[in-house]
Image (cartoon, rainbow over all chains, first blue to last red; front, side):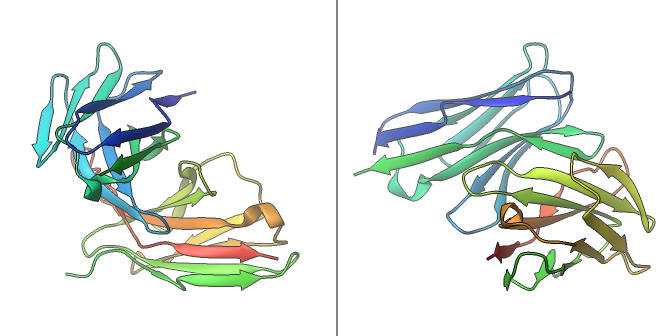
Length: 109
Length: 114
């Protein structure tokens, strides 16, 4: 059974700092997704990582995928308050997404 | 181009009742998946429909059933509602081809069972 684990589950950080969220998964998969969710809202797609070594960047967020280590990272650079949200990674398994528990990120002024 | 639309956005039901949630996929998409997201947790896969048939199913009881129509829209039905069925229900649409599997999510239906 595919399991997806994120850490940390809760992260409180100051504006301007850098930090990384980690996503480990238990079985081989070639596609990994990162989503953002604001309270009471649906999922907003951030990145789709399709192959080993893939790196994608959008603004202050950068995601990478290492399929051999079964690890993806979401790196936040010079955090701003607007990035406060819950972030989920999800691994594609035959078009079924298996989600991590989510990382609740709070960025304080 | 309309994205994935779900209805209703909010719903309150009583224990034991039945509920139907609806989803229209993104234009051009042929596959619909349903997820349940309890408060504070990640979404859990319920089932997936393609060509009007259930193709995959997660670990949910038979009280959860669905349907896909010829226009690719889908319904999720839950019978004999329990308090634990209170959650955000998300619909995702995608295209069946293996090289284009990104799922797009609707805004969700917030179901409260009292």
